[in-house]
Length: 170
Image (cartoon, rainbow, N blue to C red; front, top):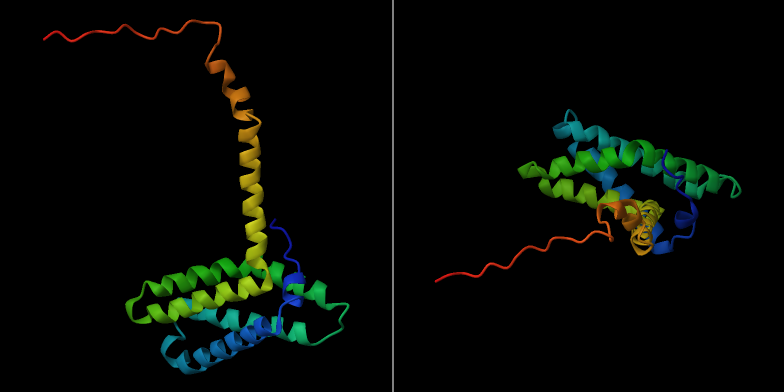
């Protein structure tokens, strides 16, 4: 089970970041209204619909409701996104970039998902997980844990045959 995504990054976001989220929602709404007849049967269209709906719900939770309940609701929504939707959205929109005429639309959608994840703090959680894994590998290497595990392969007591030098006859 993935780690829960805290709401602190979104609640501490600057006004500029919150305005970016509103701009992304407005862009998604315009894309949805303008392209619904052409793309409504495409595989990625469902992801666009989910993304814009979930972003709208998140922004409404940030703006309304009791201040004491906001962090729990926002954290629950972000964790839900991480478990169910983020990877699906990114995959669907990256597939859209492979389609020649709609590559730019796919790039815009991928960038929107990435920006929302950065503002909401989802990418920070993944960076912490990744840095924790790297720290574990480096500490295992520093402590020579691998040498202790594979130390029996090279026995220090035995003499190793280094071979005989053979000169070339001309």
